[in-house]
Length: 487
Image (cartoon, rainbow, N blue to C red):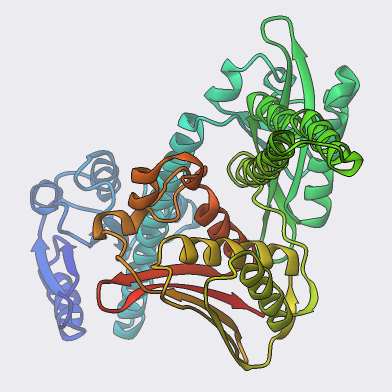
């Protein structure tokens, strides 16, 4: 697609000169419009005119005045003006023409090639100016959008220049009296730290970001009369120019006081579960064990003592599950300590324990491949034990439970399969949710029901290893839990 030719208005009262100029420009590919007077030129010129070749001496008004009016009118202020004169050739005349707004000045007679070259040069200049104007407008639009985004952000934001002087703070920071940075616009980092020593850790990291060009993260404690002591976390992001110079930095902060309080509560809660609940339970178990060792109990007393120990063991398992649940939900997840181990040894040990505790049941074991890797053997034993106990609980007593362990190049896969009634389809999406129990356990109630945390904990253990666990269940195929563990 070819571009439209530039429109040139040729203004000259001399017919011969006007003809020659128009012909030269027409042969060069321009669209030429002619005018013989200043008033005619002002009437013909509009926003579609690209350039006016204007004789200085016209019969009605001066070409200098025509140029001034063209540059003063909004619709023609961007039109290029090239003065052409055979009489006013002195330096003062040229300077006067340029001062009236002309973009160029030629003295007639003009070589045709020079005239066309001068017109092309002026049009290129105007094109470059328009591109710069468009780019400047786009930059200004982007600046306004960025300022709007920063000013309306919910988090307090501070901008620094390359020397560490505060140049901008957003509305969120202005509204926050918990940070003295709101009073630091125009101040240097040194001044801010000197006025409030509590800001020193913060200002040091801003200086580090400006020095190294690397993102810095940290936290500070600040106090105000309105809100009391508050804890803030912040991130300082430097702006690096193409030549590698750090030209600015932006700091965003967040009030994490409530989050810190919640973390402290979580730690206290987990500590209470692990210590305050287990202490009386341990005392109860030890007392019952001493009664058994002492002997001399009649049948009823021995039965009660055994029941106490069994209940204490069950309570200990429930406390362990609650601890794992608390760590997964309230803390950073169930802790997993990876170390070299043989997964197949873990599986064999778990299967043997379940066989011993369920002497009437058949638990089949199949292993394939290499079981060596870096895993938390104790946690995987716990996860597999949950799956096996679940399979034994929800399958007919005369059917086997199958455990498959397979080690491949990328990781290992554990499968636990049992026959029996399938898990209802509507329950499958929630099998690994906390406090969920199978439909059979809910019907039976009592101690068989448990807390409903076993599968949830199993899922968390798998995720702690970077893996996952899934379930499939149908009437003809039975139920299979599959655990995938990367090496």
